[in-house]
Image (cartoon, rainbow, N blue to C red; front, side):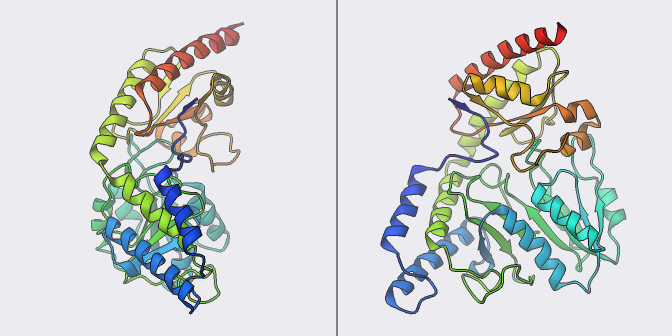
Length: 377
């Protein structure tokens, strides 16, 4: 099997799974309970919280565990909107965002909020002049992804955050789900930051929202204090402990892992550029872990299923994008509707081997030849 859909989800690191199993078996108490077993579980939860905080360069009180990045994004957006509802009704974002952001904003638009989409340059980067022009006295929130899940485009959140400091009433939320563990992350100029465990070789069902101290949120899950006052429910201390372990492991030897993926990406690009009807949508300065391509005249599902028959797995758009007829992100960057309708995403990992890429390229090339022949019949 050649798995090239790591941006959808990653396999669980065995050390992470061992941490979860140990926590489940040795810490059976509810962390909210007052007895000794509850206290023991609470101490484990607090240790996990401290570890995540230290690794992300924030304070322990700024870590909110969630069920995943989608909940974290919803908590960030709806939490701000409901807490600061008298501050404004204008929100800035891009069309590169994950569906958990775009669908939340679609809901808010129906409720009377004004959603503005920022212009992008030809490499998918936010147009700074457009950002400054669109901010007004009614702007309450800017919400963007640090790394686009479909194309791997990286936004300069440090620069964007510095600009937004001139607008103290505007809150800056960043979706870092595709960034953590892949690029260096700095949260100095960010108010809210979301990410998830199952994207960093951890278990599904746990994520995190970093909320800086100066920001308040209205909870979207009510029921009293839990791990934090901002998110109620029985603390999932075993999942949180496994998440902290996954974060620690994915950040180890970061540069070595990055360079390995970069070489694989360059190898794929070099080969695909020689193939007829194949165009690469991801700009060259995108992260190497994500490579978005289109094949002219061939439906993406057709190639996807052809590759799957040879035990090679890639994806069309993102796993959460739904059944839309085209990729909004690809169209926004390329302005080409046909490319947006035929896009495929290859996503790599430090676990990916050269041998796997050789097999992928060989399989892709043979299927492309066969499908192109059928197209011409």
